[in-house]
Image (cartoon, rainbow, N blue to C red; front, side, top):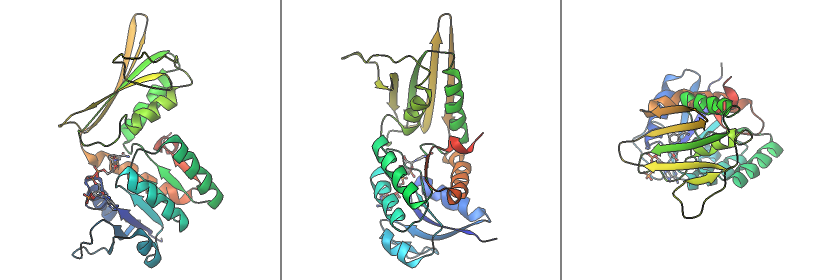
Length: 249
Ligand code: NAP
């Protein structure tokens, strides 16, 4: 069986180092290149500081980006220039940016997976929330992350609000009130504190009862089964898919 040749951007990062361990343990994967801001010659895997140079010199089946939103947005366009499928783990893409990438990937018939959350438990939280929103009109989201997270609200909370919007009551924003950011009429409250990793609670209320659906990430290892799933699925796709829930029944 041919192995899937993977190029990874962000290998020195917290997610990147977990991904290296996962890829090395998976017999159907081959790690063929790193894209990094610095070239660490001591690595057994060739490292490129220019993504074009990497794509010009290596046979890449899938490009995996675990850097930051600004870098990932540039990288995914360059991967498309080379018709290379991408798995993007960084959040922070706008609706317009996703739509534009979807159109371009469809025209070129190249797969892209942008996954705001690779955790299977978090995806189930989103799916359960979508299910509950059929029965509860009123909902609010509290998302809690470590203090270094660049974007707020989190990509996961935005995606959850998007999945629930057709069922829930569209609330009106109240100026000068501490009611969070309204996304699709759903208030999202963001907390950033040291000691946290990634957590989200979706709170539903109706007369006489409440329902809370909560997910907690305690270790970045929890993201790796989702990264593995995305790396395998993306080679079968012919356009961009946003969110791993499309691959989990
Ligand atoms: P991190 O530890 O800061 O790692 C990011 C890495 O990217 C760093 O090594 C950084 O290098 C490198 N980098 C920055 N610019 C680069 C460039 N132009 N080319 C190549 N590498 C570059 O962050 P992390 O915790 O691993 O998270 C990485 C990304 O994954 C973030 O966007 C985060 O939001 C996202 N994330 C996604 C999920 C999910 O489930 N989808 C889960 C967790 C995190 P320097 O240190 O030199 O800047």
